[in-house]
Image 1: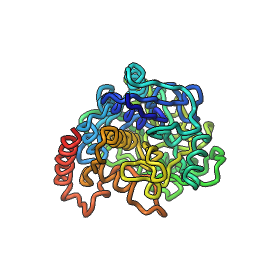
Image 2: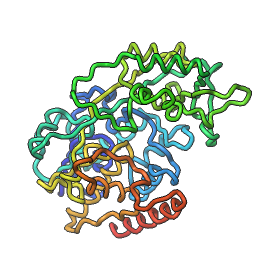
Image 3: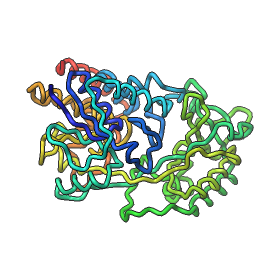
Image 4: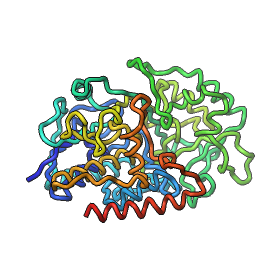
Length: 426
């Protein structure tokens, strides 16, 4: 029987493993957790969501929403499970974090063609192998990759947001509402007056930062720590994560700024501070974030965390099928490949698995149409300037000559193209 090795049981590794196994291909899935944990992960389950329980917007008019629909058409297990365990989140696909991981973990472990090996991989196995070890790749494997590729892996720093117990939020001050009345009241809103915002802002920019041992600090913009963002200007937060527009409450004064919390589990006992990724010390997080109106007595079940994210210089190193130019038996998937985000990581795992199925069936790589969101993302990963390469989310700017007026046509073209791509695969 044909066999593929996969290193890493994050979203990319799990997506790839299930796609391959569901097509009769045996998989050895290596995962070092819980035998060896990372600083960011907290559970022993596969596909753990670390910094957010949101898989971003569900709407097709949003780039990530379109990407999810393309993945759904291609048979993504990740998207299927996410929809199954979804909880209220307005236009966002928000999931119960633990249930999401537990469900995928069970599916993987019970699959007869997937052999789970709980150990750290330092040396890449012989044969076709997908390296999907993620942004928190172990030092041993990272060193192996660096030696193989003849250069240091690039890296940046990522940050996760704190979790708060719902029972500790003062709902006499805070209130439920989704921005622009999206059809449900799934977000908790904490409104600032100008004076409250000024006090919070001044304490935030003076807050004590946790020690970062590595020298190079490159923050990906979508996960920039809130204290770093705040230092760009006093009103930056009011046009970003604390934007008050669309969050007015009838019978109350117009808020000067609004902090939002998003439901984190199905029981609605935990809420995530939206946009509050941070590298403040735990003590400073508790002190400063309790200055947010409604959170004076907040009980934090998890503080924000800074962690090192690793990625490769994909345009320099990867073939169009995401295999290494230096060794086509080794494929790179997930955030290690330079995509950024949970959905994008899973999508890259799906794409790599598709290419491997064709290879094992002695078929040529079928180029994914560049007019699809997944195709545009892969096209960027492979063809961007190696000198200036940085991780990339799904976004409509990846399409050539795109404008908002043409968006509906781009969406229709993408869906038609992905359906045709699937037909050709079959």
